[in-house]
Image (cartoon, rainbow, N blue to C red; front, side, top):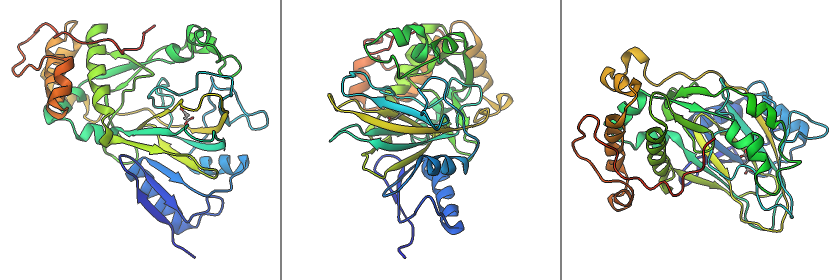
Length: 348
Ligand code: SIN
């Protein structure tokens, strides 16, 4: 028998071959667990996977968290349907996100199974928030470790979001629940509960601001971070085949579903696994007191400038110069440089 093979993918994640997820040996399971902690994304190929197999595999990682907003499978309510009909123009999950970051205890991970694929396209992209954090300068890392961010389900799943657009009816539900949900806060940099590594924990779809910063300042900082997180060296791609199963860690990865198969149907089954409250990478009493104090003030321009300056160190100078003026010495309360908000998604 060919031994299980774990092959790192370009950018993010690893592909796993020569394992049958319905009959995993103890030795293979140990390797899969270790690979999950290490890569945060595992793509399994050539699986013959019923709905029951799907649920059984997900339960090995924890309890199932039934998604409130996606239409459920008619016979297996713990399975969420991620569907785009041939007549739909919008797909679900087209923006970078981490599933359930709007929950107080965000999901550990998700298991996605391809059920009906378009003739081409429909890949899922993943970005490693370990790698994105590791690539920041140490001054930026320290600045970010002092911060918390707010996350909300309302912008994506609330009444306004569902009404806006041609085709979410029948695919997304319970907008009233999203409308009524309180925003939650999580550390901007978490200590990952499984690997113990530091990871960025903000995402374009569900993060709405930085605690203690004016809205525009928080968004400016988030926007710069998002640009950084999408650099090709942190991004991996899953091209689906019949029999592909993806397992990812929502505390370590962003993902998005590409919408590049007009006129064709795509059906995916997703099961989401319960997680836990997230701890900051650095205990609040150990975070840099100056930065924490500045973040708590209403005007946090100095912190933003400092953080952007750090980010500028790791981004290509030409690209960053298009968006912000690089400030080498950031005086306290320096006014914000001009920012291009052209691509910023509307809030509220
Ligand atoms: C999701 O966002 O969970 C779905 C991803 C996909 O359909 O590829």
